[in-house]
Image 1 (cartoon, rainbow, N blue to C red):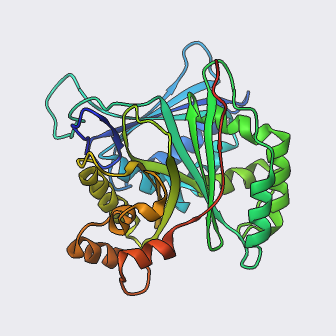
Image 2: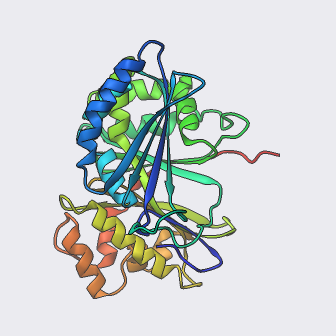
Amino acid sequence: MTTTLPDRVSQSAFDGSMLRVVFLVDLHEGTQQEFFDAYDRMRHEVASVPGHISDQLCQSFENPSQWLITSEWESAPHYFAWVNSDEHIEQVRPLSVCMRSNKALKYTVLRETGRPSAKQLQSAPRLGSGIVRHALTFTVKPGSEERVRELLAGYASPKARVDAHTRLARTTLFMHGNRVVRTVEIEGDLMAALRHVAMQPEVRAVEEAINPHLEQDRNLDDPESARVFFMKAALPAVHHIAARGADSAGVTRHALYYPAKPGCGTAVARFLARQDELAAQDPASPVRSSCLFQRDDVVVRLIDVSGPLEGVEPDLAFGIRGRRKAAVLARLLDVPAMEKASSLLDRQTMTLVTDRRAPAEH
């Protein structure tokens, strides 16, 4: 699902193209055999996962501590369904204890030389803006929402510059009831930026302060506890469309929460992605960009609009146009009987906690 409009940037997990995942690993010394044995047990389980095509395990010829795992998937949604599952967290646990560091890279396949196959390739290169988008989400204990909101709004921003190639561009936090969503925009390496943020004392202090309020226990001094928490909190960006080179003057940012019925999260995200692609064909649309984040049945849509949200047509802001489309979405969402778009917009709009842009560099 890649737009052909020349003035739009569109990136989507729903274009149906094959996905190749490259996983780079640096092991602790002496754990090579343990890592190999753990992978050898795990690969048979992964082979039966829907959408999995193949994978390879490679060891560096020059440095035995450096390993590479590549895997092919029928589509990005298949991969995300597996990597975001509790089963995946347990499957990779024996591998993680051997790792000094790791990095996952995800690519859709445009061309493949060799014998023709039934694999679906990406039709054309996508345009990009040099920004990586990611989000984290977690819930806090009911009754602690106001205290958590104060803590999240009050911390000092970490340094924007991570290294010569990576920079934090923007961080925005929202809440909806007891759910917290933190979205980040990064120029450069996502994992380097996340590690940089985690090491900042001002960020660590806030994370420690909200620990007692979390519904899922977390001990940041225990690497395994922290690993599991942040794996479960990851909320990947699955679709993004924006006006290319748009002026940000007068643009406001908002987030909408779409609680999907059990098992319907991917269908909700796919539906909203299609609606945003159609809406983008209207040059007069006040929605300058839309980014969908989805994990299991949690779907969040981040939109930038010209002027205040109140000035946007409710069905356009909520991602539906027409009674039939509203009825389709109603069957997928775990909300009371479908009301007017304006009522849904009021109820499902998340509360902005803080929105911080990094200062421009000269």
